[in-house]
Length: 251
Figure 1 (cartoon, one colour):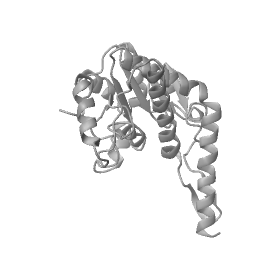
Figure 2: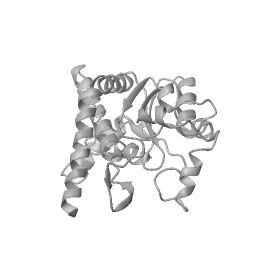
Figure 3: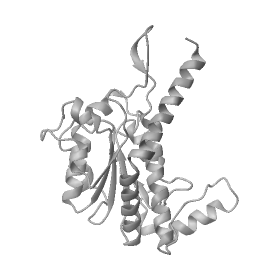
């Protein structure tokens, strides 16, 4: 099989998943966008969390040109990306009980805020506890996960529950268990994961919905512009001055 055919197959698989999300997640996407708009309008703050590669989608909506300036990254040392050494430590930390509580206790997250939690499997202790503890604080939780894992894997949290069980709104990425879209007779393991593509697009659809919902209410959405276009830095500085008490990645 030619490499170009494999590339086309992966892109077709990703497109198919995006179409499913568009058609099957329209209602929760609208609900999540409305919740974020409500929170912005009511003076609340926005946070996003993801562990490992799920952190990529969280980072994609933080300090992003065309994105809401109020979205902050809730970082957990050792589990944001694969920069920790060894990289396998990040996976181990996701299974540690009590870590989420310690992170939330030392964070600025408070009642009335929104926390987006991204976890493909939704089975590890960290995202489950993060959602449980956040809701106990009065925080609204938007979970982004593959619901299929709840029926095809076992939970690693003592409660036996998954991220999807502790969210105000669940966005289902529709990613198959194992996160690999392609197989080949000559390759032993499945390959070509699409979760980052789909989850990132799903969240950008939510953010677009939120911006539109704010505009519909006559509220200028606090959007950032690219720093690589003329006037971009001046625009962003003004937004950050106006909303500085709700932005935690800028001092």
